[in-house]
Image 1 (cartoon, rainbow over the protein chains, first blue to last red):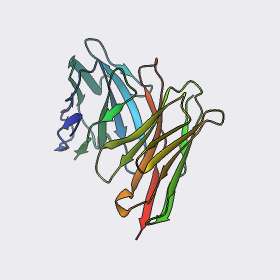
Image 2 (image 1 turned 135 degrees about the vertical axis):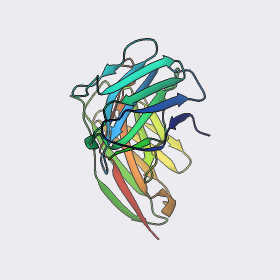
Image 3 (image 1 turned 120 degrees about the vertical axis):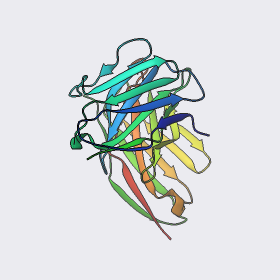
Length: 115
Length: 112
């Protein structure tokens, strides 16, 4: 079964609104989760590392105020796209590392369409 | 900086073996992964190899790692039409928090 769950899988919103995407680790606790963005027919781009109980670490070029990350518990991280614009339309995927092993599991992704 | 490269496209006939190649630049990579992505879906972890290993086999999948040349390959035996997908090679470091760098993905097309 799924190890990582993302919700919603698809979301359509109007320009200027904010959208929250959840990433849950179902089988184990995770102090670290990762958020990626994938454009059509392209690879995954790491946006940020979500750290439980502390601030997220953002990759260069990713706007912190645009993409708010909250890792409030050991099983849940959220990504909020604030004041969304059409160029934010993309496929957002989270991943969770299983401690004690090299396994890195991904969620099913959330497709955001901003009109 | 770190970089992972893959060929973009591979076409094979059903029943043949597929070999997808990947090169990476970071010699401190700890883990190397192969993921499968079907259209509109997330990434499915197929297999991974620790950097001190040369080979790993899991049913139809064989991963070969040449650490000297920084070359990783994924061999799929008896390729089926259901194997058609995009395959991503990725590398991560630990310590380093498992920050993962992905290749561009290889689109595998299996002809019946």
